[in-house]
Image (cartoon, helix red, strand yellow):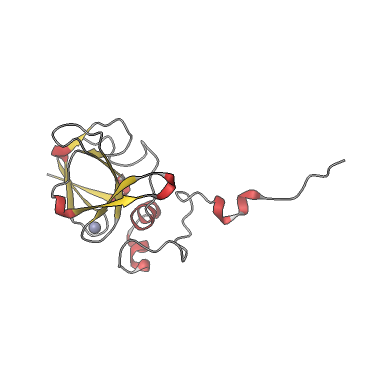
Length: 159
Ligand SMILES: [Zn+2]
């Protein structure tokens, strides 16, 4: 007769969900920006910290801005640099705030991202390095691009 073995898989650190674990970066996950970690942790929510500093992704349809239609500007939540205008925001159906172009291409840096077994284009704030989201080539006219952003990376300022 087989006795049940006493193994708890959930306790293994590799099984921790990055979106619900707020214990912070390890030596393998350097912060995306050069700002002081304690200052960032104080100023940002746990989700904002994980998304902008550790390239996390908020769950679809949960962020503050995926369905927002007000006129205004979306700034980087970390450094307040204006990044996107509501005039280029559109309904992508993805559950994340989506734009067909950045306010200024110089303000959003695009980086090839081969993590998670995929080849994607990561978008980061050109000013502070905060992770914003990813860019895909299935967007609408006139650019054909879809800037798929995390609400947690952005701070909306109404016009
Ligand atoms: Zn920034």
